[in-house]
Image 1 (cartoon, one colour):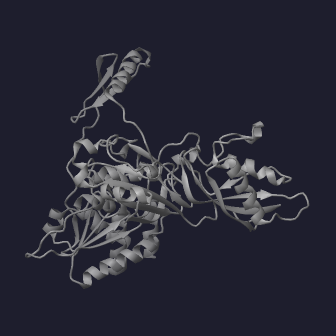
Image 2 (image 1 turned 60 degrees about the vertical axis):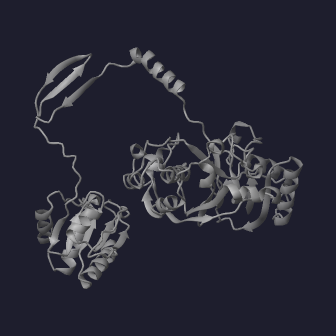
Image 3 (image 1 turned 30 degrees about the vertical axis):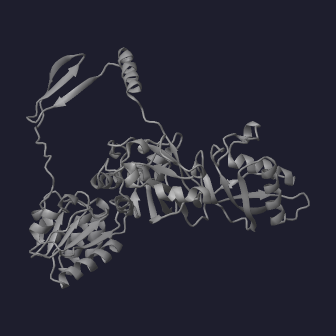
Length: 512
C-alpha cells in the first residue's frame, strides 16, 4: 500500500462541499456533487486493488472555492509497485476535463504512510474578498440598492459586495485585530448536529496566528476593470490559524462587517469575544446576514447572500406559536423578590412559597480598583479599564490577564497625551493552567512599571481569579510574603477575590 498527497484547487459553485455525502458502506459510491466524490470516481480509472478513499485536510461548505487544498489517498497497484505521481495527476485532470468539472490537480506527491493530510497540516488560511462601494456612490439612493448598482460579472461568486454608506474599513481592521491569539470562540461557533465534543469546555478554544486586512485588486478583465475600480475599493482579509470551529470564521467576519457599518459597537465585539457563550451573540445584527464559502489550507472565501426574514414571515411564526400554545406542557414559575419573599405562578394562579433569605441586585459596574500597594499596584475587573478610571487613579500600565485589553480612549495629563503601556498575557481560568509561566511574564511587566515610577492596574474579566492569582504571585515572589499573608492583604482590599483551586495549589507550592 502506498500513500499519495494530492494538491488541488477548484471553483466550488457547483459543489455541495468537499466531503462526500454518500456512505460507501451502504453500497453507494457515486457522488458527483462533492469534491471528494468526484475525485474518488476519477481515481477508479487507475484500477487499484483497493477502493480509493480520500482523507481530507479539512471540511468545507457548499460553494467553496479553493486556491490550494490538500487530501491524501492510499492506493495499492495490482503489481505491488507504486504509481507514478505524474500519472495520477494526468489521469485525474483528464477525467475532470472530460466531465467539465471546475477542479484541477496541482501536483501529486508520494509520501510515507505516517503522513496525514489533516493531522500534519501546519496552518490553514481563509481569504475573504470584500468590494466596498465608494462613499460618493453609496450615498446615491439609486445606486445603493444591490439590484441597481453596477457589479462586474467576472466577480460574481468571487467577492462580497458592500454598499453601506457608513462602512469604515479602519473599524473593520481594528475589531479584527482583537481576535488574534488564543481565545474561547464559543460565541462564534455554530452548533453542528451529532458532535458531542462541542459541549466540552476546551473544544472551542482556538488560536488565530494572524489576521491581515490589505487593499486588494479586482479580477475583472480589461474591459470592466476601470469601471470596477471607479466604483469599488477591494480589500483582502486573511485569517490564518491551526484549526477553526464549525462556521467560526464566517460569523467572525459577519460581526466585523456589522461593527464597520455601525450596527454594533466595538464593546459588543469585545463582550462576544471575552464572554464565550452562545447567548453572547449580539442580536443587533441578523445572525445570518451572510455566509461565506470556504476552502482549506489556502482558502478563498466567497459570499453567499442570505435573505433576511420579512414581517409577514415573523407574523406567521408568531401565529404558529399561538396556535400551538395549547399543546405546551403545564409548568410553574417561581419568582423571588428582593425582600426574600417568593411567589409560585401556576395555571394563572399565584401561590405563596416559603420565604428565604433576601438579596440585593447590584447592576452597577465594578469601576473601583483595589489599591494593593499604595500608589503602585491596583487590582480590578475589566470595567476599570475606562479612561475616566485610569485618569482618576493615575494608571500608567494596564496588565490584562486572560482577556484582551478593552478598547478605551487615553486621557490627557497636563495638556499632553500620555502613552499607557498595555500588555496581554494569555491565561485560562482553569486549574490545570501553568501559573508559573504566567507569573514569569506578569512579574516582569510589573517590575518594569515600578522601575519607571508608574502605577499598574492588573485585571481579568471579573477581577476574582486570574488577576488575583497574578497579584498574589507578585506579593509572594517580590515582597517575600507567604500565601496566607498575601491572600489576607488582597482579601482585605477586595473581598470578592477567589482564585480557583488549581491556582491556590500552585501558589502554595510556590511558597515552598
